[in-house]
Image (cartoon, rainbow, N blue to C red; front, side, top):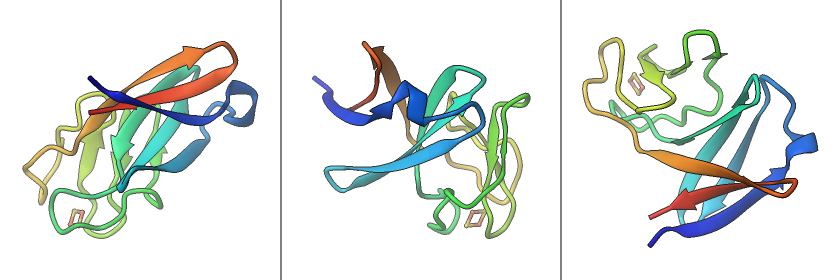
Length: 105
Ligand code: FES
């Protein structure tokens, strides 16, 4: 069963904004893509760079690794471009009242 981690209030995460949380040692980025909350682990599968500083393209549903430029699908974690070829972990997100909650196994 997944553990639930409070992220913030929905009002605190505007469209296009992101929030990074520590989920018991796993760093997770939660992005508000036009009201769709998407969560991905903050570590690139290529060489371990944090993804948090990378640009997000909500229309494409991607985040770009700032180190070597791989694009990752925010919904599946799969890389869309090289050099990364392994997926990054993604997580389910729920809205509980006015709180954003991420579920981490
Ligand atoms: S560390 Fe992310 S693409 Fe190389």
